[in-house]
Length: 242
Figure (cartoon, rainbow, N blue to C red):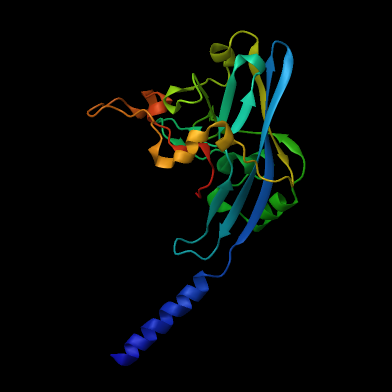
């Protein structure tokens, strides 16, 4: 029995050492650039994020991949028309929120591979990538555009006043003459952007934010709920992994 325990412990230690071998990865520092038109003039907002793709080759499930994103919502001021916040997430068909840049950055830079099936060649190409490209957020599975989530506030001091903005019809929220021109990604070595907490200081309240909440017994499908019943503080930041 003693020998068995010793062998078991050694086996576990060897297994941990094996699985602890670092996986190959590629880290990209990117500037997200959103351009709109207000009464015939271009306005631009940008935010710098960092995205790491990791290729998992030593997994109990076989090959795989993961991502880690450091980002915050982009602030786009539309002159005297208001402000739109472009969040680092997308709205799924069922109304849930999930990662957007993690899924579509690779394809935007010409690496046509899924996160779970990254190759050495794909990671090498991402490491060498330079330049500015349109952000391709078309979902081939659902066959529809799946852009970052655009939101605004009736009163920025009140998180419960949040509402969703149709990125293709900015004029509906901000008046005639306002429209989205495009979203682009540009490689950069600039520092990460940290301006959101100053613009929306209540974000520092964490889970104490007074978000709107669904009423008990409300069975409205999530895809039909207003964004204020779905969103949480973390939605404004890309500080998680997938």
